[in-house]
Image 1 (cartoon, rainbow over the protein chains, first blue to last red):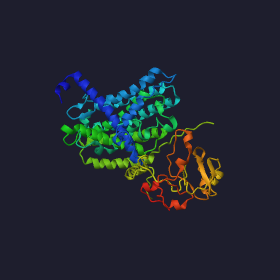
Image 2 (cartoon, rainbow over the protein chains, first blue to last red):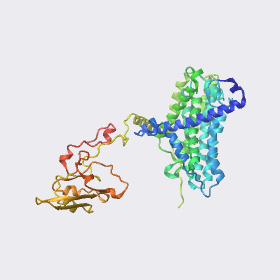
Image 3 (cartoon, rainbow over the protein chains, first blue to last red):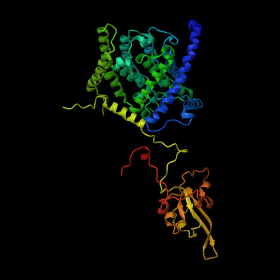
Image 4 (cartoon, rainbow over the protein chains, first blue to last red):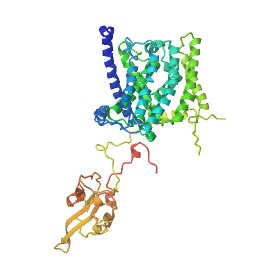
Length: 363
Length: 168
């Protein structure tokens, strides 16, 4: 890497901002292709295969289609909020990539923060503001209901998400993304499988996909908070949705699968990072295609009655291990942790009943 | 006491195994313009095949048609017979009941096997002699014609394509 670019602040900023923008746009297109094409075999069909070889140009065709559409703003909508909504939803996605290490020597592309994971946790919850602006500004009851659901769900799932990250920070002894990736010889997915499962479930709810996509709930809320959006603004939401999936996959790959660390990572670091990100995303696609959508009360009880206690227990277990082994958990603890994770999930499932809440109406 | 795993996330694992098995099964969709399924051998559609050598111009088909879609115009021939001047079927109003095919005493009118009969104008739906005549390209369907049915290829069942055995 040219050291002049790394040394000069503004040159560094300009170059890597463009790199991140390009990475996010291309990554989102690749993810849309992977998801639409990947849904095919799961549903006994082929997925898009008409545009270009193997349908590889389908995301571009989608983008052109969406750009050509008319931009409609409802008459009674709050014009400012309606326009600002998609921008504010999309910005945090770009901001997350500022600290994600693509390659060992560089660390975070724009800022090599020593509190990178705190930054990620703080930024990733910003999108909810944009979603609520969109829902409120649309002057539509369905989009408002969907926006309220997003606020409820995202704030609830933020807690187990951050708690599972805190356990990782305890085990690796570092708050920077690069430090977490290199902090422990074992990937965290093996050392604390329970923490990984909690992170996966919480991040699926955070990025509003998989079984937790009830803010879009086509059957009841037509398309959720972006029902009144069309054209480029709708494309921004679409971009932000998949960009968020990309960002969360990248965070999971860095935090739980050691990110760029792999054989010959002095040269192939970026390759390992992208490969692990893609593996996480394929897992997300598999989960999304399998599970039916949850109801709002099931989703809330899952967050508060299952994920939160499990995240606290996971934090306690990891904390005890860190204290017992003086900050360096030996590799053979992973077998014990796997067993513990199974016992805890089975044991807590006995108490947990999704959708216990009932609304009683007075006649 | 046996332990039941109903409420321990067993269903989640089961569902994921099922979707994973789907990946290994053959695709059930047909890539239509390139890949076509064999239609039913007794296909009843908006395509007709008329054998002009067998037709005597008796117009039984026209009488049996509930809609009155079939127009047969004949003139007297030299050997005490009819000569068919005009033979038209208005497919636009046809309900595919098959009475004309069943009524034909000389088995001269059959259903056809083509199903790509969309047109841009209503007038094109009135099939004249040129579109009805029996040619090597337009063969009759096996509806009410067992002798043709045995020669036609068997219908493709999606169950067969999915690699499963049909239940008898």
